[in-house]
Length: 398
Image (cartoon, rainbow, N blue to C red; front, side):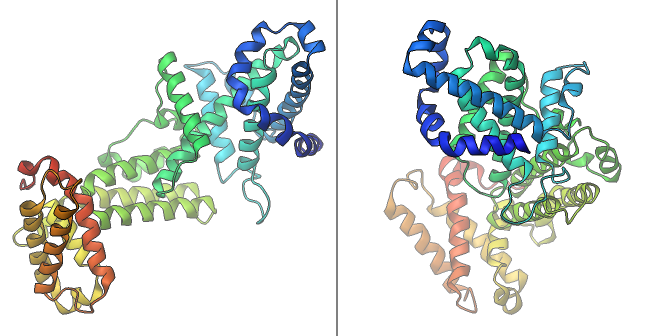
């Protein structure tokens, strides 16, 4: 902890003045340092800053070592096998991000181990960009490279977590993802969260109690949960076919499970079991429309789900009437959506008016709640681009 305290004291005085100031120049400095002589560094102002950054780099490396004392990543790295560097980085990412890791469950107002690693590794990356070419730091290059690999993979999983919650991805994470994709393309490595988790990529039909039991033995359990979340988000998006209500419901349920796991309200085994159960519902999504007579197409089912969100409509009008409304809404879409729908306000206004008139004709919603109509229009907005692009395919039924 003494090392961490020393780094914090150093950064309070230097981060804004040194690293942030040099961050925009990092790429140029990295190239220039290869031609910058020892004499230059001894007599020029830039050299003095480089020496300060070198000292700071050593302190940051020591601080990150201290953070990772609970995980022996070097033994993992030296274990051999296929792609040992990446596998060690995956496993370390699992350790740093896992809620089960000591240091990730802290009182309000305190920073978790994961947050501290993100900060320290980001500071290390900026410092190394300034002074990484100095001969005195050559022995630290492999270790710094490893910490940067972990930082980049953390950014990948952070981005996927944010996307699953519908949150924007910060610019810093976007930059790291671009770096990851570029380096992966150059090296031929495959960006695969399932491989990182130590498990094969499953199909929805594979997700059963036996699968859950096997997955509990995955080499990186936290990443296994990340992998399943990714799979369910992808498969639920396909299964719901642009259905705003159902896609939102699945996303919220997945996010709720992950939140409970993160807060240690669910164990690793419990959240795996819950995700497997949810997968059964996703798999059954495609056949939900078959219980109606006649069956509802995916688009008709999407509108049915939208109008059925209004409780008064379900009680007073019943599912049969709501299904008829859904069928008519799709007919309006088929009739009124045109290829210039996205660029002509008058075409969009006509479609909205047609939908509102149809709802009024059916007395929907009985309680006159504006939110009910707003949701139907939101479903229309989500669906209309497909009708504008390929209207001839819209009438196909499963």
